[in-house]
Length: 73
Length: 144
Image 1 (cartoon, each protein chain N blue to C red):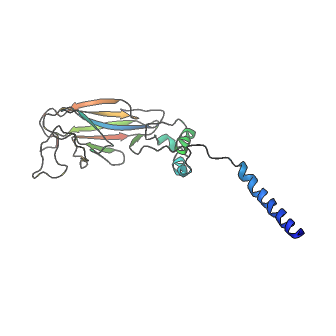
Image 2 (image 1 turned 135 degrees about the vertical axis):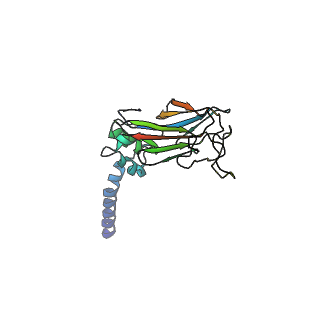
Image 3 (image 1 turned 90 degrees about the horizontal axis):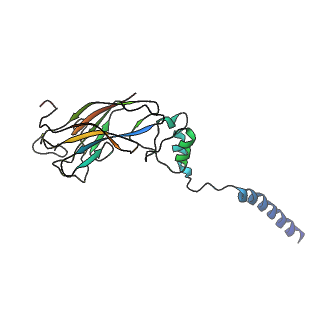
């Protein structure tokens, strides 16, 4: 459970791939998709074979290395 | 000659009437952006309760929100938890399949089995808060 807070809060989901080189990907980055309108489905791809891809690697919804539902109420 | 003098006097009078208010007009404050009135409008009618600046700026009242927008501030477009609301993370799944399709199509390569992963959340671009770890076990959660 996150919140409640007295002000609106920007929330980002992150995924860290600890395979060297360690790198963290965020839900608003080029390895992620966010679909839905509460609840939201967040899908994030990792660095793929331990290599940080410099270009976009956007997963189809629900096909990330991390998939998580965020519900705001 | 008298006619010309009279016309000149009238012209000067008109100029004085027009110029005086302009000379006294206030200049907009530095950094203000008149084109942001639409953004500032978003703050009205409780809108600020669901808005966060793109850099994580929060607003405790409508005035702070309007001021932020009027000075060119941009609002965040990502996931926002409105004031007084709560967010719940659920159904978290770590993908751990290797090359799920062949031939390899774009965006189909997934995590190498065994790569350790962790996930969590971050509030207002602050510190990362870890929620769970996974990805260590070479198995698919997709039921294949």
